[in-house]
Image (cartoon, rainbow, N blue to C red; front, side, top):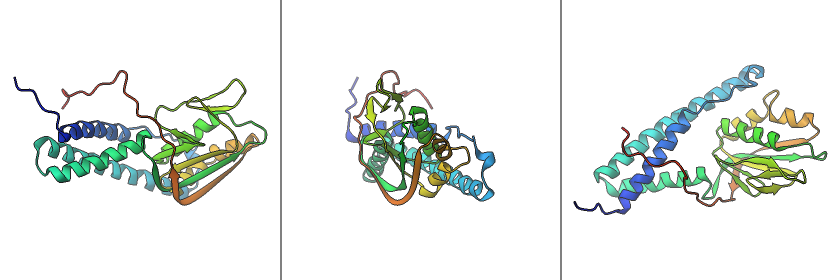
Length: 230
């Protein structure tokens, strides 16, 4: 039986299939709703519009990925398909933290004079940013990705992915700046919570945010590609 040669198109098709699965999982992720009952009507309308826009973008991404994957598998329009696959792989690199990212977003600075801000507060901030559509996040000089973890060192310092981060805490997030800033200001949300413990948060909406911290690419320990699915 002839052995199939692993061409560049084959490899890109495999990587693209992985990215397609990631997009589908992202599309069905459950959205947190705590605190929404206290939002003003204008804020609710703004958040709803953002969610609808994000859903539309994800629908389009899934369709584009499917067409590009099929084009690679069939061998038609190779040049365009390879370019599209490379673009999608770049997107995957941003999501996994293996490439730098730039774009509009927010810069959050949390001054903590009483050393009262802990890992749960920072985790809540990251979750709120993700729910508001953040595509790349950095805390201090640590890139935050899907499997990032937050804890406290023996000396009481904040730890992100095993690295101590000291106040003032600087959090960079790329995405819709207005939507993320609105999410931070939800009554009972992140800004209000850290103020209640004596911290001083500042949220800046910026036209350009650079997320330069990188993570080394990691290999999945348990999950494997499934070629038997539909």
